[in-house]
Image 1 (tube, rainbow, N blue to C red):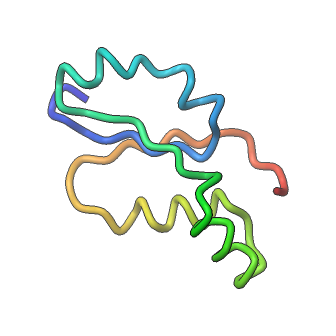
Image 2 (tube, rainbow, N blue to C red):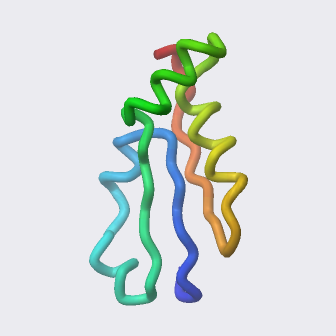
Length: 75
């Protein structure tokens, strides 16, 4: 995180527990777009879970990444 890694999580609860101010001091950030319209749209098209779509998208990004995976449940 001190190298500016971005944290991707599939739950709002996990994102809420991360100190964003401290992360920003290192150029890092936390991202949880599980409820974004484009994620929901893709889920409806593919018939999968939002967490799956979000993690797949995060995995395509370059740079240092940290994935914080929450408890899976159907959406």
